Image 1: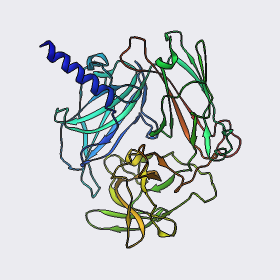
Image 2: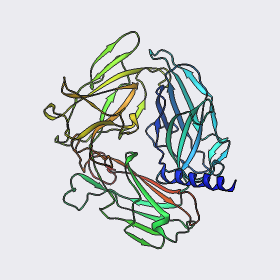
Image 3: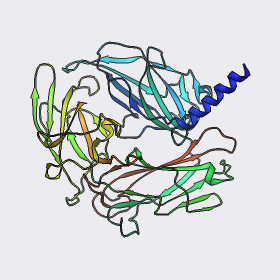
Image 4: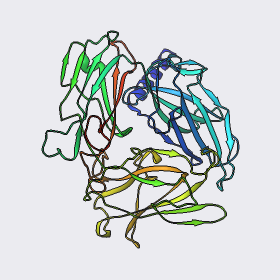
Length: 430
């Protein structure tokens, strides 16, 4: 019995140390899964520990019948590996909660059931700060995970001061953005070794796929950490996001080339996209890669709006496919995942890249990136598709994690947001 216990603990340690959890959809009938602050579809899902903050969970089941869905939480470390804690150590109340609010679609051609919930529930809530995975599963069986979503629980014990600057390096002066910042640690944090106990992450436009991971301080004095080295705190600026307005399928927006209507569904053909990397930078207001479910008609956007089969087309320079590179369409509409669902396929007959997505009515931002097939890190690049510009408006989120000397999980003890336009004179500056 002792040997079995030792083996079990060893396997658990190995799993917790290596398996990084991400968000994604595991069942093809699940569409438009959203988790956002109450009333704000464009906000990142963050709640303060032991507060009244609430998140909204929404998703559609295209099977159209009524099913039994539940959700639970998984606490993760700063790198999204599962924390080595029992659920009793980070969930107060019940370990799972049934999703009991649903509505069958009406008006729409597409038949679906819309489910929603307010998270966290009073009977099932996180009891510790940190990174969390929300798991939605079917029929009370935790092995039947329908989809997962990331969210953050913050116990604010730091003060973060940040700004956005142009880098000093002449090679990236016009194309990248520098995020210098300072962190003042609270008195409750017992930091003996800041390099081991403090971890810092920087997210651009809420993206984890290109986040700056475990940024190290340039200086450390007492309770203050200063981050100011261009080796770690610079990111490519990108360009303002492309947009697609699907708030009405009857009144076609300026980005729609044509639409086919029939008795069962709607097909939307988006105007072909081209390389913008050599185009002059133009500022316009975007939503930084996010999307909203909404409609211009007087309908409930969650269960009375329709879906459409949307065809995207990208024309490469001279109609020649990228050499040794794959092209992906990214945005919150596909969770920024660089997988087959986002990969553009080159059509040898038409000499363009194509991808079809099934999207709900709303307003969408998206971009194109290339990935070098020989790059083991599979880093996404705007260089061949959008270009990088210092002038681009981006939203940055800085996260500070702490682990006690005998702690078994990373705690999220600081968070701040800053726009690249903050303090800058001109259009959009504050």
